[in-house]
Length: 331
Image 1 (tube, rainbow, N blue to C red):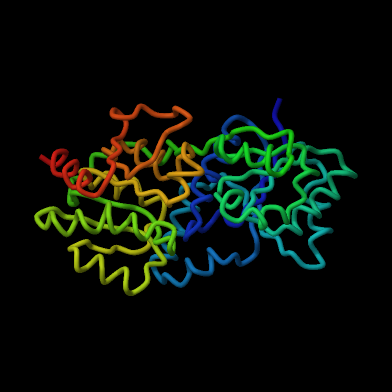
Image 2: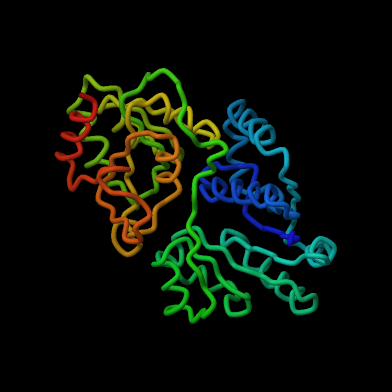
């Protein structure tokens, strides 16, 4: 039976430092193809879109490409001001299911749940981020106990909600690549090794040095490239000294081309995805594999058995093994 589904997220239009948009776009599109009535809500002028516009013509093209790729998505902006309650009453009055993503203001959840109590639709909280583990106090600002359930993007996150936050109705709901846009291409190879990811402050600085920068510096005959944002000047200098081309912001819809033009790709997860959140693959793993690109990972355990280690991807234990594996794969 078709459902009237309403999904609230930080942004659908912009993916600038906003990896959640990758999966959410594909999810909403698939729900529409299944015959459901889906509306997508985002904050008016979210910070991700503001930063995207600062990319100039590249940002403008990214927005245009998004609208061309997802013309079916009905995107409606909301504001967390005195008009929010009236807006929600109008937009959600016939809803069957309302999904609130965790990268939205807590006050939005309060208003949605107040309306749920009067209207009777189901309200679900969707978490595709690491804050439940790294910054639980931020997640606890949400009225979690009032939701009809929580969808968590990995078993480790689900356990935190159940055992740490006392949420009883919580299910594992993994992210996935949007295969309508992520698939192998026939592009000519112009790069040997590509890494797609944002700098991440101190969350993987040491890992990037060991598994990306040092191997590149010792393989000067290979062409390395990095795509991402929030790289400080010092980080860009380190990349340049190692012979790595820094290519800046990569719109997600351009990622399949970047993967397709590279002979292999790297996965260097943030530190907590290699320890406390081991087994929770980030969206980049799904996307790289969907594009058919050989993937070499710094230490990470697929604890939930989603992939075939040694066949779908290779894990190396240290920087020297990374260099050896890259040399072997590139012949």
